[in-house]
Length: 528
Image 1 (tube, helix red, strand yellow):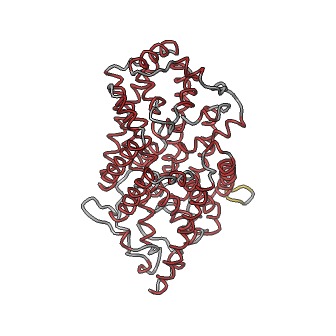
Image 2 (cartoon, rainbow, N blue to C red):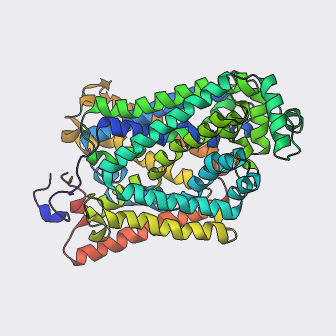
Image 3 (cartoon, rainbow, N blue to C red):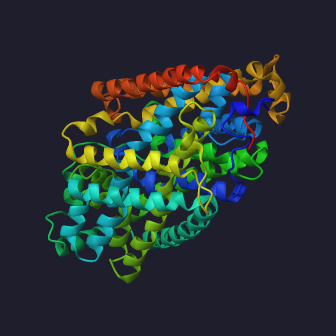
């Protein structure tokens, strides 16, 4: 701890440890939940047709376990609000902490609202509208104007959700999570009671009812792509599918920026259990659901439907939503409609992740005086950093308007996942160097006793994960199938990093004029 408390804005953060490890576990599981990010990215799996989604999921579980070890180690040693920013600034430098964390945790998250809005339209609003007979409304929700409206619903709901503070966030999160679980149970039950032949009849009948000139066989025959069997062992193609799945399963550590507000955050085993529990639960559920889709509707049909009606393909993209598929399999009765509504619990329980974790990075940076101190203020009866929240909400709302109504702007946002992964890469490098950069602090961590040939095991784990991430970056940068290697988008991302550098050095100069040495400040670890 610092012997000079004036280094920071105040002696302690003022935030309270209102979450239990159970609350953190639910948040981690929601961050990688199957129903939102999982179902969404699965629609794109069809574009790597020779890959096995099951094998790719297993590869993902192994790789992300390494990430979980890295983050659990750092949380246990420095359970501070701000997560990646705090670790990078204390183990690398203040510049690297700001440069690596702000583009990934702040700038890019402003641009994720349209992604959340697209998932809301595709997963909930479109299917529910169609199931109640309003096909035109379903198509509206997947039009540009409809997607904008659903994105603004996300902004409004997430703002209220996050502003209520950690205690109320946890309560609302639990209720919505249980609602979603109830919907998923009905969803699974509905798929268990059908077969491809039975679903074919139900699908054709439902298309006729909706006035669509589509048939089960027509969708399969109209797809020129040949899909490999779901259980195939094509390791090369499946590894190429792995970077696609990271859009869903990489975020087990999404709540790491919040652990200054989690009880038991200093315990390695419990923190690893939070991250790994979420990973295993999500991965196992995925591995069970793929065979279920195959036995209920047919794997080839599901992939063909995704290929033809993948997210972003047009107003009828809601047809590829598993919510729509399961409801059709159930005959679109009362129970099917109830299922579709309850599945919305997954989305709204998860929706706060678009702002919550990022607000703590903003808060921690302000607490370090690296941005104006006002963003570290804690206000109101709910004990929330309201100005940090507004710094997420207001730019996100403005950029959402630009996203949908400024021609060409959407192209700039294609590398959104890339920026967050770079932040995680920076944290992994910091963990690799942890034993040498902060030996006294590292020695207190339970993982410190494990070495191989004198090298800390955690550094070896981090090094292996660095190699994996570099291979992913290479694929993202060279393969067009991921949609991330757009030159315009990468240039825009470079501008964001340049902006981060300008802000940091500008604030460093400004603070030096006030007699505050940011280098000295970043050598110290703030209190809770």
